[in-house]
Amino acid sequence: MNVPMKDWESMGSDWRGQDVPRIDVDALRAEAGRQGRRLRIMLVLETLLAVVTVVFLAWVALRANAKPVESWVAGSLALFMIPYQAYVVWLRRREWSEAGLGVEALIDIEQRRCTTTLHYWRFGMYSVLGLLLALHAAMWVAMVWGDSAELVHDLLNMQVGAAVTMPFVGLYGVHRCRLARERCQRLAALAEQLR
Amino acid sequence: MKTDMPAAALAPRHAEPTMSLATPEIEAVLREHGAMLARIAGSYESEPARRDDLLQEISLAVWKALASWRGDASLRTFLARVAHNRAIDHLAREQRARGDELHDEHPDPDANPFHHAQAHQRRKDLLAAVRALPLGQRQVVVLALEGFSQREIGDTLKLEENTVTQRLSRARRQLNDWLGEKA
Image 1 (cartoon, rainbow over the protein chains, first blue to last red):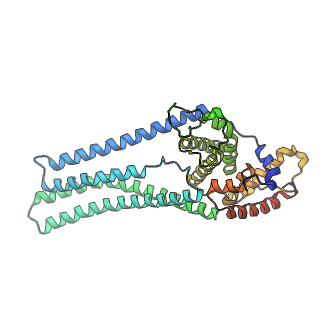
Image 2 (cartoon, chains in turn orange, green):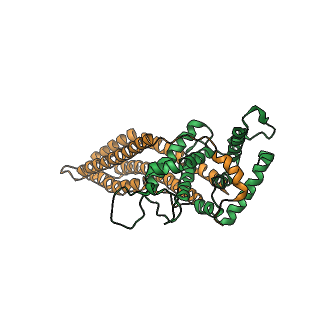
Image 3 (tube, rainbow over the protein chains, first blue to last red):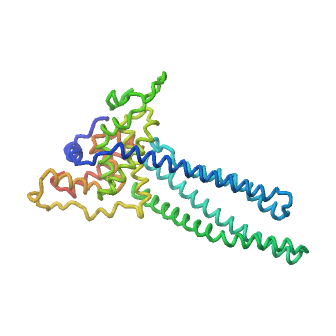
């Protein structure tokens, strides 16, 4: 049966008789341009920042007078940054067309995406915490069993540097986790309403 | 290729020697289907400013999605699907999942029709009643009111036809209760 349903026709004429706002195509064009520019600028800035960070870390790790601990920490971070940035770009793939999806499939994919975002930020926060604890543990090991005061000093300096920046990263991570959790809850409520 | 677009709207943006379906121009699409998109937006948002925001989001989504229309569904079905999906995404971004908060707008079956222009009041009551339906029913009802067949509703929302029938029947009973004789 591919014809409009008779019993909805009278109500349908009332429905279609509603006053509706006109769509301003020029405003739409301007907004599309703005959104496209914003997205491109964001992607370029993020990629530039990642490239600058990786280059800087590589320079720290490879410079002639680099201490072994600096080479290890900076080198590991530089290697970690590349898949990290690739993952961020992957998470940013928001511009897919949902045209082929049904509403329930859309909610399902959004729920999975939301869960991934939540895991991503949790992973980021715990790995930063892990790095800080590893540096701290390494410092204690060096203090108790090592004989290099310089190594202890370097490890302490790294922790001080991390202690200044990490709280901001942590707070931002908590904020992003909260947003993702709320979105997951809203999607679950919508899925419930659709049943 | 079956389409409900006027021929002028199907003019290709770039003259390419291919057999692929031409992407319709956004202006023509909005001229032809803008009112339907606006009514779909109105079924999700009652407050005019928010409805206009949602309508703009839907129009943008339609614009972006148009290039992916392959003609396997009618353009109207395709647009309705994009609009509903965008509206769902819009709801998911709200502070809380809405849907129940519109109950204060339930039509009053005892409202005195002499105080209002009858047709205007009927449309207002109908819109309020549709907005008050649970989301799953609201979606199928909006499309039924737009004149979609059950099969088209199923295609748009990717639902089995018997699910569409079931939801329409429940919604119809609910609307009859709320709107009384007028339904």
